[in-house]
Image (cartoon, rainbow, N blue to C red; front, side, top):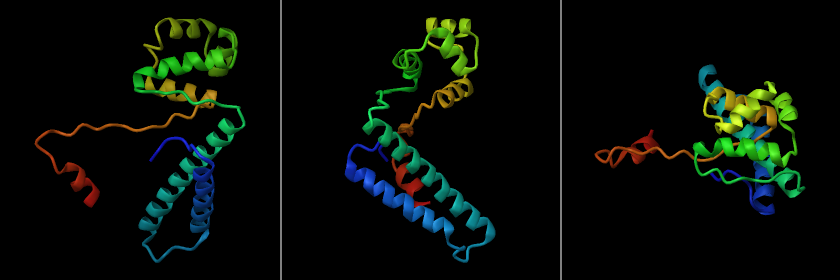
Length: 155
């Protein structure tokens, strides 16, 4: 699935999907066991959450209140934080307050490109800044397991 909605047509289709998924969640169980019903509803809820985020991101971009950054790899995430501080026109002190850290921490983070920030901290920072980070993960498979993709899809 693509990360961002790129056209009004995709946006309208996403809104229709959101309405359809909301309606599905409002319906009683389809006779599944309680456990399976929970799994199905959990999956629908997660898909619904992602669609809502995509629609909100499109609304913000269309209104000129957000931009998208190319993030070719996870290694580039520090650049997104640094760019966000400058795009938001925040001083180190204001950015620190937004992240909930000391101003000296922001200075150290930027000087080292966030080298000592854990994934948990980076996730927390992204949430505090309202950043929407989504994309694809490439999982290389061993050369001897040529049918692994079809095996996974068959499950």
